Amino acid sequence: MASMAPEALGALEESLMTQIETSADFVRGMVADDIKSGRFDGRVITRFPPEPNGYLHIGHAKSICLNFGLAAEFGGVCHLRFDDTNPTREEMEYVESIQEDVRWLGWDWGENLFYASDYFGQLYDYAVQLIEKGKAYVCDLGAAEIREYRGTLTAPGKESPYRDRSVEENLDLFRRMREGEFEEGSHVLRAKIDMVSPNLNLRDPVLYRILKETHHRTGDEWPIYPTYDFAHGQSDSIEHITHSVCTLEFENHRPLYDWLQEELGIYRSQQIEFARLNLTYTVMSKRRLMELVEGGYVNGWDDPRLPTISGLRRRGYTSAAIRDFCDRIGVARRDNTVEIALLEHTLRDDLNKKAPRVMGVLDPLKVVIENYPEGETEQIISANNPEDNTAGNRNVPFSRTVYIEKDDFREVPPPKFYRLSPGREVRLKDAFYITCTGVVKDETTGEVIELRCTYDPETYGGTSADGRKVRGTSQWVSAEHAIDAEVRIYDHLFMKEDPDDVADGGDFKDNLNPDSLKVLKSCKLEQSVKDAKPGARFQFLRTGYFCVDKDSTPEAPIFNRTVALRDTWGRMDKARSRG
Ligand code: ATP
Ligand code: MG
Image (cartoon, rainbow, N blue to C red; front, side, top):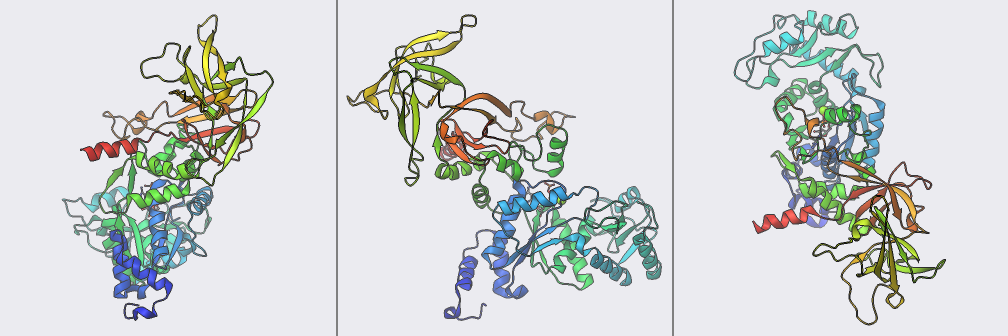
């Protein structure tokens, strides 16, 4: 392609060249260089290789957007490959949820859905080839001994007494391992590399171990399973993956990755490492998420407090916001932790454009408008989205009794409180000015349970003809027309930015936020949301973005608060730039 005359470039090539010139991060830079130099014949094949042992989280989204994004930008393809080589922890439930999540994020693997378990036969043959080359041997040391013989970063390893078995003996033992003749832990197959290598991964790493477990796809066909190191690179090679993008902890595995493909003389892929995503106030590893789910600390993998894709989706996140977030954080080689406020900020940006505005009252206080005719209803016109002038208006019914937020009234208003209090006039959003003329209290508790007000019929639409100004505006819902709903308000799952910041002997779970979920049972919502389907999103004026929960029904509506309106990211950003 590099030799092609510019006028011969088609549209795809042209966009490729633009991409190459503007590569935004080092991974894209490396891929662009490979295309320019003609390595891999200019092809780009990436893969996203989840192990189906849990649900995907937002960290995986970063990897998904990178791998599928690279393929899309460079005219290549991205494979979805299940790295299902460990039968003890894997389940079909996870295989299905992972596909659903990748699709929901908006990516398409087309025909390129693969399973490492489909390569078990080929991987076995590769292992036999290594044995025949004298590059692998069956070792009878136990796991603890293997660890002991491996040495440390400062101490060299020691060779296994089984290291010099003959090829014939190794072939025979490996075949018998495969036939299920030996017990778990009695034998492993190891690569024969270098027990004094400074890289511990090259000190005769284990390639196969005996596991008498039923695999979710291959059943009881195999009593031996390849390790990650043996399965991963060879699967990449089988699929002709050009760029195998993974997280930094595999950097020290790259020499082994290369050694294996080289010794086997098979298709060579390029492993490239990048920094994994960490987020404040949450945990990201599947092991920990599993612990929270199985220990009942949250309500399942799709609990809206979790950073799982399914949790974020249930919470009301859009896939566009998650992809935008992945773009904004970029791809680098240095480990860092991103503030969760940036994720929320990105979400608000998206919802602000998309979510229709409605009125809802989360903690209702009854207001009776004494001079409003009994039994009458009129329609108030309200804009569906002031940020989107194509969104139109809707009618909101108004009547003699309405609800406002308890917080929007103070019997004794503190300084700078501009909302309702006895004798004061405020605006009911888009409707009328009202003045508080009386307060009804619960006789025993003294709590304010109802307000008596009057309204000014000359202020329809929320403006007064005589130019009279009011400082406060409240959202409201007509009592007669209101929908009763449950609303779930979420806060960070952990109280500390770093959940691992615990006292000696403590555990990340010590930092769980006891107030991460508040359930409000008696919310009053505007009639227009009555038929909203699970997943539908709204902005409730002044209280945040909300989404209909998957368990919601017309009889018992449930809304999740996706995110509050207040944007802490903007403030933090300003504080930063002020220095
Ligand atoms: P976890 O550590 O959460 O259990 P994992 O790495 O074991 O994740 P895999 O199923 O093996 O999970 O991951 C699939 C792909 O997603 C891998 O390429 C992995 O590097 C990548 N990935 C996992 N976590 C993150 C993260 N936090 N940021 C970026 N990429 C990630
Ligand atoms: Mg893993």
